[in-house]
Length: 225
Image 1 (cartoon, rainbow, N blue to C red):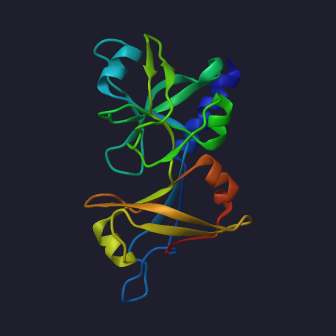
Image 2 (cartoon, rainbow, N blue to C red; image 1 turned 45 degrees about the vertical axis):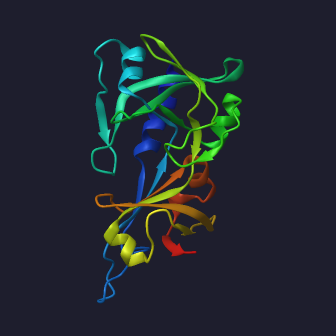
């Protein structure tokens, strides 16, 4: 029981952990000063649910309970967690749900999570789940069998259209992320997700963040490919 609780706290910390590197890696104005702060966030395993699946898993009339806000306005880590069960009854016991609810349920895992569950995870942009593996979700009040929707979310960067203009990119383009750390690396092919309201934020999964030793990064920078 104590072990499960420790794991759950760690998951929460990874979801909300954000590395904010001020005055580096952001586009600069005419005066040479950064115009925007670049945030690189490590996104731990999590689940997105429909309203219907929330009620199936947690009871009729149940709605998600916000626990902590995420960096992007309007998004949050919920109090609720579910068990994710893969083939041969392999499971992850307490996977955090992120809100708000969505039109389609989806599970986002890291590569090592897929190994633990026995699922060969495809790398997909969020919401692009056609032909992906499924799993079983277990909540305190019910069970949902997802026929598809289990993915490893491809690395991406959120930005608003003004940031996109400064970087010289547009929605759907690809950029690289240069990380200067004890395990310095360049991560290529980050998908640009640009809209009117998003804050400038890179999303990596736990495997990517740990491999690059992001916690000890001295500098991060978005680079056009």
